[in-house]
Length: 329
Image (cartoon, rainbow, N blue to C red):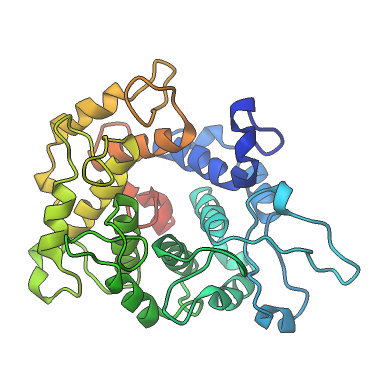
């Protein structure tokens, strides 16, 4: 994967680091860490970090994180700077997740450049852009920023209070969270909101057992919305009136795990749905009967981890990596 992508994935070249995250973290979840070339993975990931040439560059508005692939890594100019710098928040999250998964000591990273320049991406309303110019801003990138700070154990890269206020403005009348204020509640956006609040320390784990009334979000409405996403076929949908999709078993299932409402999931029905999405080739597809892909395979494994399937390592739902890797054992 470091050198050449299979033909079916060559259109995803720009996201090569994300694909590697699915593969490496997935193998760890399956207890197959020995299949990963640890040193090769570390060296490849580190080679994708963009570096500022001096202190002044850290305040020039650009982000000095990780690039998604070689195709976005341009040659240095005469002054030793990347032109242009294509560092991306999501790629940086995936890079750190890979490094943490393979046991790399993150204190060896140039984390100051990442965190100091990441502050340039936070907007006045608390949201984040993923790159330094011309990009959308929504809950996905608040999650990436929160996960980056959590893994680096340094919250200087974001204003948590502003991020919190933006997240709260995204909770809809029905209890779920839209990706931006006023938008339709969505399973992925709801995960990003709840996981971010948990990582930042604004909500506790298992809120339901500790007094939902004092929580900063409307927990009863959120619980109701999340439970309604389990469809009649046992799977989870991302929005009302949509088909069940493998990945939402993780996105919505993780929200319920953080809230302490996972005990209300019909686990037998969910397991049966997920198995209908497993291909004879071993991976998982988006819907039953389709060909498998890396994205849905990873989140299929993650969903089975939430279901405490024997042989699958427990997952840290807030970070999207195994519990063991998250705490660094």
